Image 1 (cartoon, one colour):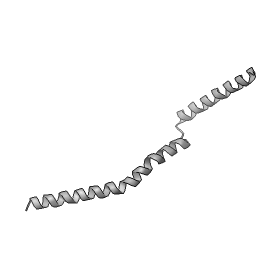
Image 2 (image 1 turned 90 degrees about the horizontal axis):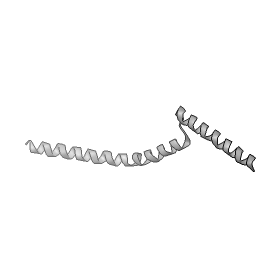
Image 3 (image 1 turned 30 degrees about the vertical axis):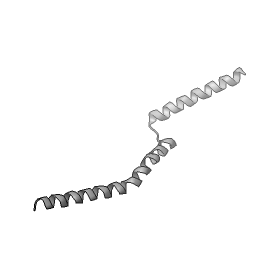
Length: 70
């Protein structure tokens, strides 16, 4: 029983050391990639609508200012 506990403790220590080493090296993990995708997908979907909205505002301001100067 104690042997199994000791083996699990060593395994956890090695895992922690590897994890710290990986983080210190700055490696890009699967979870980093997944979070990037989850953040960027909504941005890419919303981007065209934002651009259209901004263009409509721009043209509205140009026409409004153009008519004010007449």
